[in-house]
Image 1 (cartoon, helix red, strand yellow):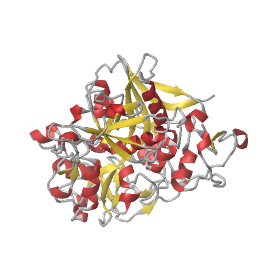
Image 2 (cartoon, one colour):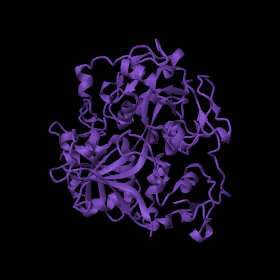
Image 3 (cartoon, rainbow, N blue to C red):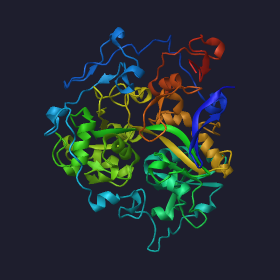
Image 4 (cartoon, rainbow, N blue to C red):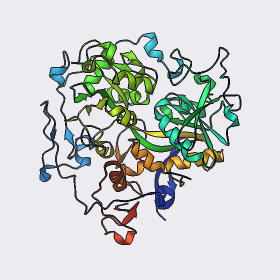
Length: 510
């Protein structure tokens, strides 16, 4: 029996990390997967990055294996890669930019920007930005009480992670369990469990739940359903609450990696952007970065986990970004996709939104060049691929884990048994009753932890090498792109010593 991939952190007086044990079948639910014979393995990590230039054209890294530095020698961001490189010219694109010069200081924050704006307080009374169905007294006539649902598991979380709640809700409805989801913003999941924030505290009147077909329904929040069993978020709790000595009795269970992307309308001619350009555009405002010169078409949401991650990376706190306010994931997508000025439009969102079939035809991702990086890279190896190669190997740094927070016993087990089941499906420690959450995560343009080769222990912290065991990188490639260079297998007896383990129908190293 092999050890499972990293699944949870448990808060105590001092936060510690824990590794969840489990066999391959329990983690991957092997009976639910199909494989495709992709032929013999080949290496794609045999190219060095191109020289750091600001040429505007897109190009592939040239191949010179003897000059290629390892990730630990060059740092993951500048290591060998065959991914498309799209340089960004800071000198010509940023007004008054001086190469190697200090960045101008951020302006003093105004009161509204410092306070931020949560998705639950944007004038609608609803965390998802919709008008809701409640009456003047805050009730929702005609809807069933959320507490009347079959075996409800109450969850509060980010609007950007609603697709995860929806999938889990559909998977467990056959038990029957009911995931009752209050849509809020990035930090409300942690606040609900650690700080006992209620659904009513977020401004919500109703919650969502799903049937086996994934169809959404609404229910009336009541006194029996206001406290969450599970908090769903895309930030470590320390980003949301002051926790100098941890939080006793709280489990932080890690799920799929959610990459963030800088996005523009597909009609835009732009292909890349740099951390410096984001600092000037969103931190300093004004018309400093061509062609993003209009405050009206730079969309910001201080309560977005993706904006928070970009803010940590570029040095502009999310609450101090300057632009036109959007208050939910849905409004963010619509604002970028339907902008009247595509060339001036700029925003950030998670890849599950940016790459979804319903939005990818109207929105495209820009390659991102981080500080100290010689090139801009997409989350994927190219603008149109789906392999998340640069996220998985460290060339693309903007990503965070999806987290589920829950109150736990001293052994780290959630106190609510039904909530424990939902969390186990989320992390992969328990086979789902129907469908496959791993398949869903990949199809939703997220990255299961078992497909990553880098990790981090704090939000936007230093990347470290990571070897998940068991791993699913080969299966990820097959499911995400339709092909894999790994050898197919029926059991580990079919695998060579270099890749001795048969996971999900492919020979893996771990």
